[in-house]
Length: 254
Ligand SMILES: [Zn+2]
Image (cartoon, rainbow, N blue to C red; front, top):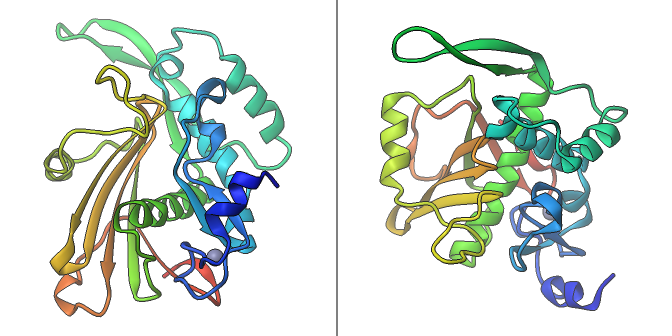
């Protein structure tokens, strides 16, 4: 293991399972595979126990396959599969079934109702959606730690909603995402947000509540909310998937 990684986690607790287990490794969230051409900026490395670091490791690849296939150039089929994508799909196929129930071309109409072009309509299989939601919960816990410098405890509830080209936010949610402010990225050059991964994060510290939005390659995205379940007032109807975490089980669906 590289020496610079060791410094990040030695003597710390895993940030993904409630802070009860010693960290044994360093987790990159988001993982390198989500950045085109190995362009991941430094930083966002998190103390992690082996269990939370490893598994299921195919979820990183799944998220990357989905992010690349939901990117604008892929949806509109304006370019052939990129080398990044080809490599991923080749390696992915044997470990995990294809993430979509269907990926059929559907016509897109312009304002005068003429066919403008076609786009791929992508709908997740249940297995892929559940895995991606779990992966998103993990990314959310990393973001919580990045911005609060504290580990989300076993009292936290992580609500996740996946957004794809066929599951767009409704108006209410769109406004909520807008209220989170402009997007940021790990490295911003010339005020340009890095399209590989951009995010919004807002903490309401008196309520111990955070809302976040993360987007990959301007396509696949998730919205998540981390709340403290001890605050009865914060019981809400929730988003699509609910998770919690603890030392015993790690991140798990509730
Ligand atoms: Zn852990």
